[in-house]
Image (cartoon, rainbow, N blue to C red; front, side, top):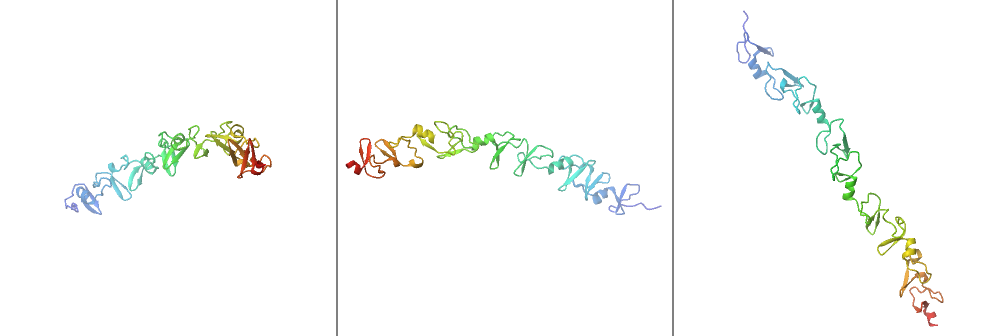
Length: 279
């Protein structure tokens, strides 16, 4: 009769008992678990002969330990992927690879409505105005630093206000004496003609176009009786006892000598040079 095998480790007689051959040597089930079994990559415990063993790329698991590292779904009979040595189901792996929302920091799954701006991504509902917190969606927006604003909130917080109507200037505008105006608000005080890009003058805190200033505001020259506008040749003005002259009209009444910066004599309403005044 053949001799019964003995366990290579504990020398127990294995006659009639279940045993395992390891590298050709008989080993009892107890010693196999203790000395020969693979360790589970998840729980670190040995995988005994009576348990089902799963393996992948040189690592081993109990069947019940082979599950998704994120959602713990059993994967023994399911498709799976590996990422950074972690076993994951397809759904969790997709989430792991998906871009992160810059607002809530959660994954943005493929096919989800999202917004990309300056290299960052947002869920559509997370891309909101910094001011009113409403989703911007397909609306236009403006940025200030790292914050984004819908147009109304940006105008309210940052836009200059027109001196005339006190409303925000969203584009263009006119700057006069360091004060901002809408183009359509910067008009002649008399005829309401737009003054942007044209000549105008100011009188008693009101602005006038050249025509209205001539006809309604400007003083008349005591020489030629035309308005003294301060434009063109009429820039320099001579004033004497309540009357005003264009510089080029301030001449001797008799000899027409220019009296600008010269001595003169007043004879009633007439202005005379010294020579004519002494005659």
